[in-house]
Length: 170
Image 1 (cartoon, rainbow, N blue to C red):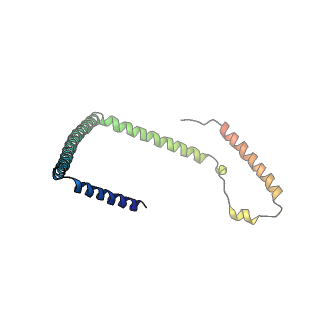
Image 2 (spheres, one colour):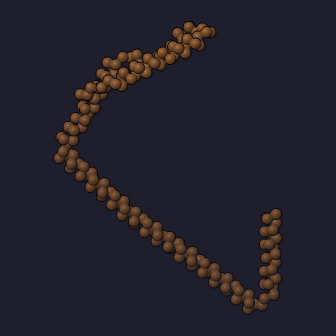
Image 3 (cartoon, rainbow, N blue to C red):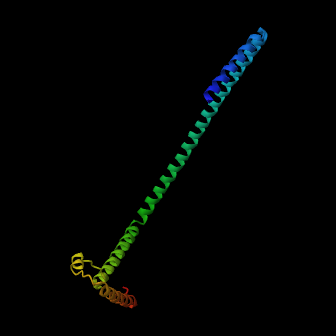
């Protein structure tokens, strides 16, 4: 529907322009034509002006970006020089402190591994599906509940005993 309305309006507007143009005398036609040409020339001038403005803005942006890049590059170069100077002055102390930190971490790891090896492995939960399904009986429910309670009580008392013991530090 909107296409038909648009085309109808276009045809009606065209017919009105033709009718007005036919009824105008030659002086009015020449004046209207001159105004239209002047409007078109003004539009072209504005378009050219905006193209120049855009070109100037792009040039300014490129100049500012190159300045910022040069500043950043010089800052990075200065930082690299400072780092190299500090490394050459304190190179031995830097590597020795790194070695000390590494040795400290290794000894701590070895101590933790030794403590974990000394502890009993009974805290681990091992599920053996073959043993669990071989001993299945139909009247197991009451005995399973009492066994679960005793296992839970034993695990709780063992956990309390483990947390009450103070750990020795080196």
